[in-house]
Length: 219
View 1 (cartoon, rainbow, N blue to C red):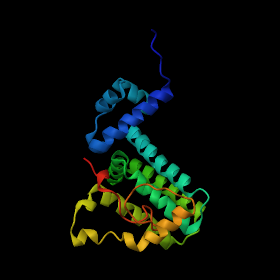
View 2: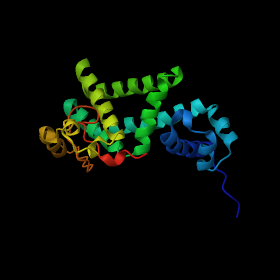
View 3: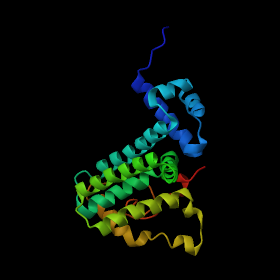
View 4: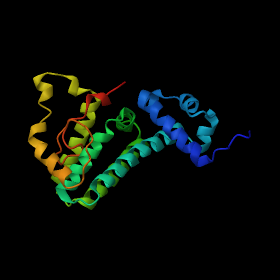
């Protein structure tokens, strides 16, 4: 039986999926291209043939994660406008945070950006695209936009440190599900649905509150 030769596009996608797992585990500096190649089932030189450098591969991996967020926002906000669209996008972000690899690649990119201008530029570009995407559905003030992104980053941190598992008043003060229950029900009645099973409220922030499930934070 003659083996089927994979196209460069198929192998590129396979490498990126392997890179998401490996970079999520060890970050930009701590991940070797050998480990990524082994997971993808290809030779290490082939990685450099397709991506050039390890940094280029990391940036491409981060862009896969960013695209997943953008696609989820578009799907969630379809047919909605204003606060309802933002609430739907926030809930979609919480659902994405259930994927620990996606969460960790995002956080590793932000950490690496502090010391690398190219990675920082890639992160800036992803924020620009998200800003444009949100403004497409909701004409909001700069203050509201800052709150939207700030809530999303808080959700990411809460998920990463598994704050949900801390049954202490200071930790519980970050969550206020009851105050936003009415918004969540209203959004679902509108047909946006998105019954994610995530135990959280829906606000207008990216992440729609701060109730990401503790299961997302796994080493």
